Amino acid sequence: MKYIKGIFAVVAIVILSAFTTLNSGYKIGDVATDFKLENIDGTMVSLSDYKDAKGFIVIFTANTCPYAVAYEDRIVALDKKYASQGFPVIAIMPNNTDIQPRDNMEAMQHRAQQKGFTFPYLIDKNQDVFPKFGATKTPHVYILQKTTKGNEVKYIGAIDDNYQDAKAVKTKYVENAVDALLSGQSVKETETRAIGCSIKI
Amino acid sequence: MVSCKNEDQNNPQDTNVLETNNYVAPTLEIYDFEGLKPFLETATDTIYVVNFWATWCAPCIKELPYFEALNAAYSEKNVEVVLVSLDFPKKYDSHLKPFIAKNELKSKVIALNDMDSAIWIPQIDSDWSGAIPATLIFNKDKRQFYEQTFTYEELEAEIKQFL
Image 1 (tube, one colour):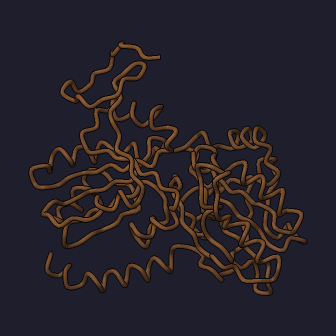
Image 2 (cartoon, one colour):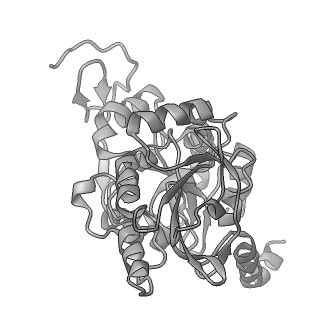
Image 3 (cartoon, each protein chain N blue to C red):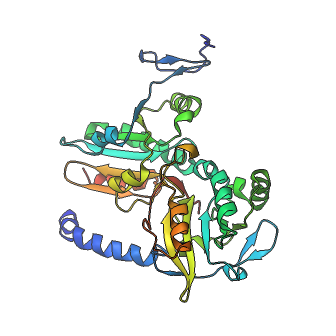
């Protein structure tokens, strides 16, 4: 068995990574499928509701993840800066609320009110939207741009490069990406990584 | 405010400790990624199980006892568990050290504090999205990375491939 494993290790890795690629969600350039998710105000929200939007800053986030909480004010600031320019924030809470009750709709409503969320805070109740995106953690950002193909994925990753201290941020990945898209340029840094809380399934 | 009250059970032979309010805080080694690197490779016959966790991460806490059990059960087979905490530095004293003391963690616990996660996450494993818990198992010949949670049985099954 060990011998076989040795021989086929490389093959297995190649097959596995191909498998992962097929199943791990959107890549840069993919077109995101629209969704219909319940907002904290009880309405259902879809990307197609935003007729005038040029794109979206989709952020998977949660009340209970300290990394996500550390970014709440910065997420509000992103929406304030970019919603009026055509790139609103759409926040989606992907966790299973049976496992993490402190992320349930009531808790989401409370948190949104406390922090003054200016954007929809949707719940992925059936947990079928975050796997399509390929989100694995909170916070996890996907920037979409409306093109002739649909809502094209232009950026995947972190909000910026310092979760601990907003004042010490050196690179604002999301702002740089949206600024580039708004000025008709391509995004320079299309994928970044940061530590986050695994999505509870 | 230092008090000498010490109700918690602590390791009496551990002399290298700090006093705080209600317990004897364990010392904590804190590294940036450069400092962590030596923990991520070996030239010896030891098999290292490096688990990335944090006190606030519920699935991490759930699987932590399995890593502790593995460390105890396989110590004679050259298996060593290293628990790398990604707690925020401001929580080291209030959360991490009390957690280590309360749970009497026997595995080596170190803290990683390095802002450049975009640099070091892919260096630990090119497929790691950055979600925790995550675990790296390696010896001098091979390494495997797991962005997942473990049961004890699953952990044991992986270790056996390295023995």
